[in-house]
Length: 139
Image (tube, rainbow, N blue to C red; front, top):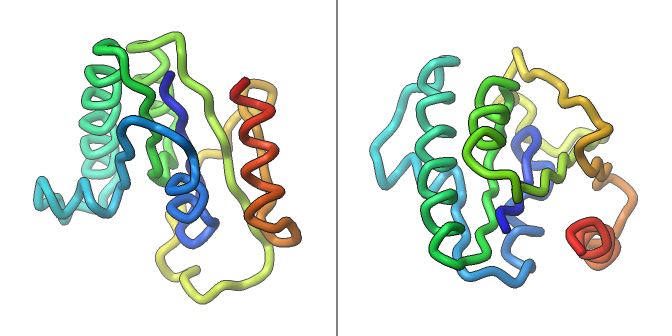
């Protein structure tokens, strides 16, 4: 299984992803440092996301449970991962209260169609409550 926790910066992706039992965890910031990708244009982001999707799919098809923690702002990149694997669970994190990193938000973020995703607003939920929602959704 591939579990994708995505949303704007500072929505709680890394915090929650680190608490999910998985064989491999791929974080967007770590991936960018590894491949030295400093291109934050739409095409640069999609390239980084597709690389993460390829790695996750490879790991998954070798019997591993993988958690991805990336912004995934574009439908094109989400569709790419879905084309590689039918065993992807998408968790979309949102928040409305300012958290201090809004200047890093992706301005052209394409909102997902929520019928195929679990959406969690992390403003008023504890970490434990968020993890419980994710566990119910994934199982």
